[in-house]
Image (cartoon, rainbow, N blue to C red; front, side, top):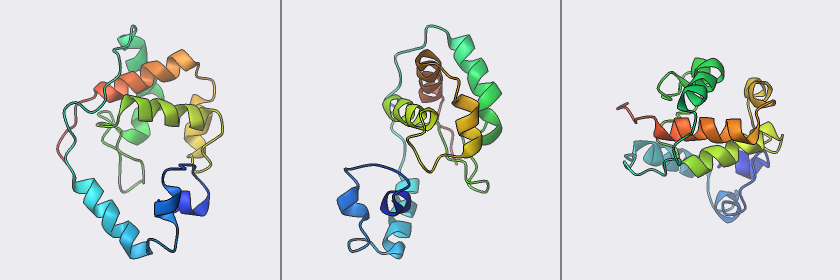
Length: 137
């Protein structure tokens, strides 16, 4: 929400809610804590099932796991988001935006890592991540 408000991330649906006249910094913190505590549903928008699961896994392990964790658990300490439990379509949309330079708050290391990914690579990795089991905190 703070990135939307600051113009570092585009999400037109969020503009009316992220406006500084609507939410205070404390409101944003409170909402974040609430959302973090919600359970992830088992039918969280999984991908279609990659035709190349071994390739998708190898891309994830090579380029993503060192920051986002082997199981997609992320690292709050390092400010790397949890990926397990995310929807396939969301993951794919954000991967494309990062690769194509459209997400202005992207970690530069991630931009470099996926810059050469094809659309098929992004689809495979998003599918792989969407299939990861959600482990307890």
